[in-house]
Amino acid sequence: MTEMKAPHECPQCHINTVKRLSVGIWLCGTCGFKFAGGAYSPRTKLGEVAERAARAGVTSSAMAELKAEKARQVEAEAKAKTAKRRRRKPKAEKEPDKTIEEKTD
Image (cartoon, rainbow, N blue to C red; front, top):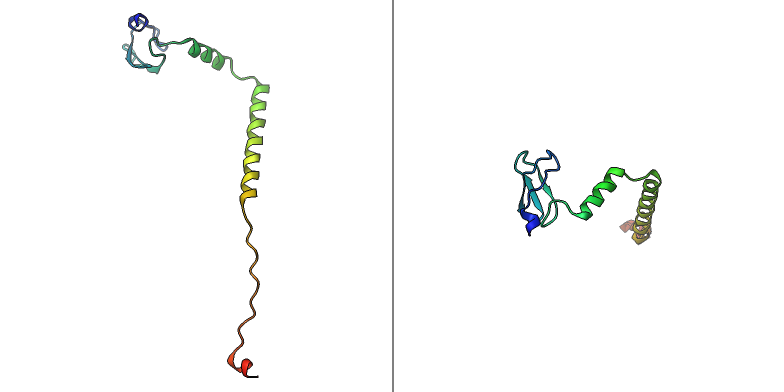
């Protein structure tokens, strides 16, 4: 709880005027920047790890792996959809009804 009441630095303007609005919602009093954070502190360990990973970016090989996996998934879904479709049997052509004259013959 004491961590919540302590002054925190804004990630945008870097001034110690961040206040908690509600659970996980923080607001800078100077620049008005509203952001999500932890329940009792605006920065969490998990958030810092995610920020570092986002800054480092995804390597090209990992990106290629993700694209290939996505393509396989889309292909499997398309195959599953086509397997579920039932084809209708073609309708047999009916012979035209005989007219009255043809019936009497």
